[in-house]
Length: 116
Length: 111
Image (cartoon, rainbow over all chains, first blue to last red; front, top):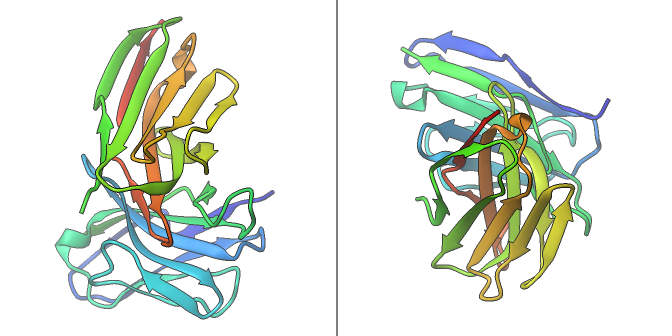
């Protein structure tokens, strides 16, 4: 089954404790991206990746890091989480073809992160 | 910051009614996307638009890419209870790969 898988689905952590949210897709997609969703603000793009070793900042990259060492994985790293990073996070992927044009065609189920 | 204005914020309608929502921007976009999000799930892509003036349907859903490239609308005909959810527009500007989302339209359908 074609899917984007995020782990964990839920996480409560303390300020300053480094964490990684994993994202994996099994569709051989070139394009992957990370979003955070906050009430009233919709989804805001954190980082995106056009392919292996190619990443770029979205609208709200501060406090986050990403890496794309393999095509299928795009982990989101919070080196020193703070309470304002409490949010619902989504990973998305898409093929780099004319049908989708590197847009967010498939989303994961989300990771709800709470930083206390 | 947020650059897409999506309206209305919420809608309460009766089953069977048609629904219309739209997104506007002060910037030109070369791609418009419409998503639906159910509670506890990630957004699901409904319709993608790549050309100014394009009108695309997906079942009871119809979306259009505005001629000015600064707006898009989504229509849902003959709404049913399972249409309940949050609908998001999203756009991508010419020459860029960043995607901007609207704040969403929350749709409630009364049976």
